[in-house]
Image 1 (cartoon, rainbow, N blue to C red):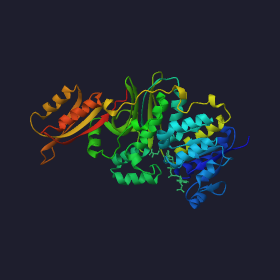
Image 2: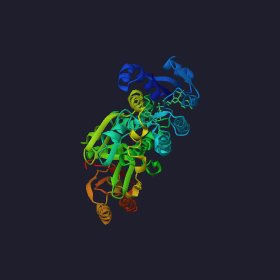
Image 3: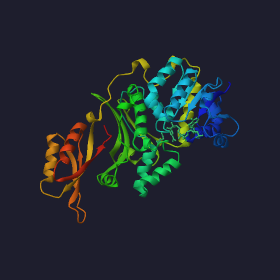
Image 4: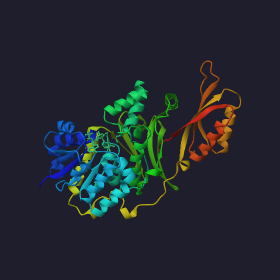
Length: 437
Ligand code: NAP
Ligand code: HSE
């Protein structure tokens, strides 16, 4: 059978890795796909750098529209990133009848609805395994392996850069900036690393998993996002003392009132497997009603782990190339006309537990005031510790863990605690998940 022709948009970390893996494992991949998958063209900005990497076996251009408009290309692989040029290129490729593979979670979280609609109308596939959790085949698991289940919740460490930063800071005592630089050199970080640090990249990935887990359209503007930039060593240390580890977690949960969709630093019991996922590794927990809790673990970023997912999509598309579009797995796992309009809950309506830390003057009655405020709002305390004041200091750190409550009640409690004359400054709040139900 004649080869299937692939055009790569971008030959950077992921594009370069994709070319390397396709070349190294060419015969094995052909045996699996049933025909050769051949990269015949690529678009980059820097021709010289690209030629050094790719050699002379493919045509390299600087205008990516030459790739998407080339009638000989069957599959376009978008590995440029961003959501302006990449959106135009993907829509043009679809309009030209080409299948698309992309690792671009930002593009899908923001414009997925439009892109999938265009692909459906044209009868082409848009595959995106590499967009979530790097090399872990979580999209395949959610869309196909778990298809019997009503998904209850998904929780994951889905940003390699921030997990790498948190691990290296804790284990090696390195500074935030030093570790971020390493993550950039290793090709883990986004072009704009604030996307990693502020939880935006994780929220893009979580939006995609939520959509295919619950059968809802993309609605990224409703995701709650909080990153790791305000985390202090002090809180990481106190959490450890209490038997918890802080991770940047993406959580999406089905509740009777709607769907929770949130990314934030989270205390997780140290005894959970997921709390021990370190460095660039990612892990995703999926709870289905039939299967129970399942966990998926692997490298969440980097050239070849991400290329592994891109190539898996290329093989899938090659195998399904001639299948009737009606008989392919739907883009969002559910039939497009069966997506649900279940609302995404605002963060004020989310239910979880909390770690609260405050600085209090070491005077009689302080703890009584704090417990009264919490009791009035029906917030139950799970644990409380008061640290010894440092020498010469008048204030002490009080740390409380609460049982599950609704976020708007904690907001009120924090406002009342901060108004007490015995409390100095702001209350630190970090959400806590037991991840057992
Ligand atoms: P990257 O290393 O910065 O590579 C981007 C590539 O796109 C480069 O080859 C660049 O060309 C090319 N490019 C950029 N603008 C272009 C333009 N206007 N015309 C032609 N070529 C252009 O990025 P990456 O890390 O591979 O990421 C690519 C995508 O994969 C992003 O959506 C990212 O979010 C996603 N992703 C990345 C990882 C990871 O670990 N890095 C993991 C999963 C998903 P030059 O080389 O000539 O500048
Ligand atoms: N910047 C992303 C991360 C790349 O660190 O996880 C993988 O999507």
